[in-house]
Length: 96
Image (cartoon, rainbow, N blue to C red; front, side):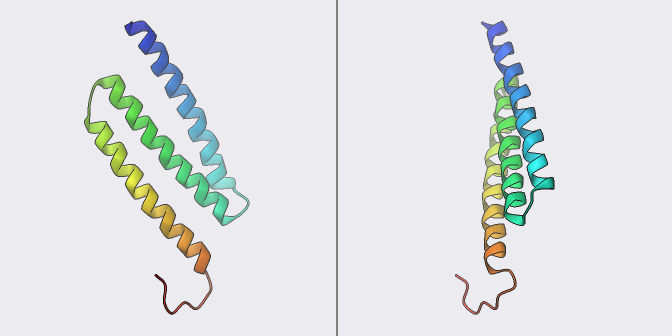
């Protein structure tokens, strides 16, 4: 059973590494700013997924706490970027 789990973890790590590489390409070479924000969002989501798989691999719940924290910060940063993109260069008196 442990060998099957090892294979699953290896497949997960390889898949997440490929996803991280593709999302970093999207973040750094995106044609426009919203595409770059989307790439950064995806990168942080993949990193949070790495932490969860690592927690399962090492039987440590600390990594899951780290993953939840990263996901929360990532969500707030994405909302802030989206607001910035929406109101960029505009005079806004009441932004709520």
